Length: 404
View: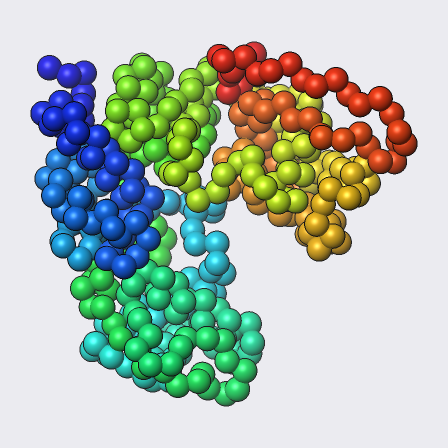
């Protein structure tokens, strides 16, 4: 008998079939709505072939429901709750509002609709919901972004014409076709049970049938860093007791590698597939964020290992890096120092390395920021020609996630 029922699911299969199930599970975690013609859609036949062990694997490990048909597969994940870092980055809050309104409008239009009619229906739905519609360029961009998102999901398709931003009083006409099967699978929240938006968010984030086990394992799978200070006492005690077994379960079922320290657990994908945002990464914001951590983490840490930093400190580090290495950065990204500071903090929050503090203009850095020892590739320009700093020692094979 295996140490966990999830491992029993794989142990019943041949080595090749078990590897294929894990491969499909990883794709479904990244693409909860997998469809023919979409990204990774060529894997649908394999998902369909292994649908029964996949359904059992997700039910046992995470409490997720999986629906598989020949044309699509839908993994119903838990909602993010109050987590502000989750969501589609191309959609603004108003874009999300239009996304919900568009879904509501699509349920009553049949299989095809003119774009002008759909826009009118969405704006009418907004009025019924008490949402003011200001027909300006920003409002049109938000609505267009919601429609483009539905195009990417395969809920709608452009049969004639195109969904594009418009400058006149009405959009350029287009004929839209609705995939009603995919539309019916899209919503995951328990709308019938919710009595308010706040209740819907809470209900959608409910733990699975195994309670604490599912709640903690979902966080390990869906978040890069899980700190004990962010868990309830019961969840933290469960993770401390079972972290070794969890490392085995997550590696065998999803190809994830965990690193455990006293403050918490980091979950990483060696193939860097199960993430939509890699860190460290390319680009001015990501590189400045990484280098700024060297100085920002030097202050005294709280008992939970977090480092309080003021927004002004982050701004000063950004300014220093721009001044020291002026040729290293995108001019567009560094023109507005305040905007750059906000982007750096937003990036650190999205990858689980920072959270806003209850104190005004203060953030808390995760103890996981000690995982990196970044060094600039060049000497500061403003200091003139100087002997380059010695190259850092190679990172040992048993590198650790947090400081010691």
